[in-house]
Length: 572
Image 1 (cartoon, helix red, strand yellow):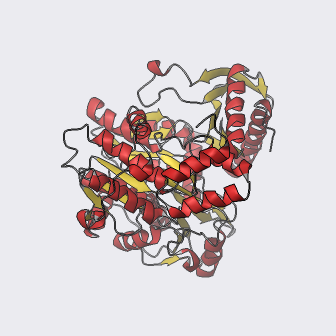
Image 2 (image 1 turned 120 degrees about the horizontal axis):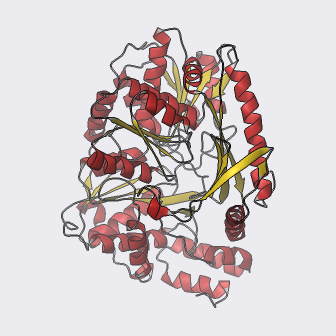
Image 3 (image 1 turned 45 degrees about the vertical axis):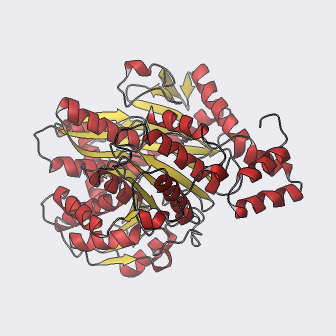
């Protein structure tokens, strides 16, 4: 198709597309003579990788649509059918509350059933952690969840789990991608007409088993059940699960944001359904003021991430960063973990290095992995098997946390319960989560982490981002905002000398003095360049943590801007 015009490629795609809605979409673009949009949709197919597929919903090879889902599922089925248990072990299928998610899930089920593969599925919107839990608990050979997590409303995605109930890692991704490439036109892929009746529905009782496992990892300490919580699922699936989880844990003073309580793929009250985005928490903050809440908790739309806001002594709300939540939960879990076998904590390499200090203080092993919970989960399983440790906690700074061994992925529901437990425990001592953070900073040193994202949409934007990473790797700066760059690590090579969970990846690291660092990489799910800055500052007993933190953040911002300028993307 490479030598054909966008119109010719679009017409060829229409002939292969089984969905009249997307065929009509392309025909309208052809009739309007919109070759620019056609070229964008037809220039290259969505790439299947360890994150599966994710893209804007619409017609074309570069969009998420029924044809793409059908071909992807047939490719996955063909890869699974090479395994001896392919026709006996189930594939779990779930979907979130986004537009088209149910249809995509039904298409996936129809392909799998026709291929002779057993299917267990969630007949209704569910959370990504529940799909991952089901994959583990039901001994599935694989799992599929239709979700675009916290991406904008126009996106959807297709996420795949391996036989170990963690997200796929190499070589699974390339083997599935090759199998997808070998699949013919989507309209020729056979679909079972009675697929849903031949697939087995997963009962609600599975969540009861999940709650029992959450209860087993909760530290047995004093808590104040009068803690007042405001919760929002951000128009996603979380409230159904969070409501039961909070009640199970004994928290009855939980107020959900009513406008955002039910799944709605339009996400009408937020511009982006991501708790980190400006304005996304406004309704929760307003309700928290009315209810005089002590804690705000928010899940993203598929409930695999957790955000939190806490009030200051002056009554002003502060949103905790992913690193701050991760460090609080890690210290909480390790303080009450069994010391034998040795506990293990794992974080992504772009998360705060402060976790290493906390782990050392508790006698725990600390490991870092590539970005993505697939690496954290596989690292944990490998080390439990080979080193005799026991996984206690894992996190990544992008609001993802794994509490214990319940789910081999990030889980915003169990993390919400544990963070509420910590806040409720501190309340019995007349302390807050901010007090606990300050105590950790004085004990381990103040680590300040800052992330800068630069968006460049479209295929041209992706090329610009790739060029920026290449420029940083080829031209190590001597200074960044007055800070000396003492070393550079190019993670695009050298993976053979690192652990399996730190293979080659498109990322460059710059060392700043003895402890500071910068990491530069493209986002794996969005057209963004991400710049991470971590700085360590000692805090004396008489110094103000807040003042030191503000100074360090100003320095980190200047460094991030300098990196963006050096990369050729400007200091936006």
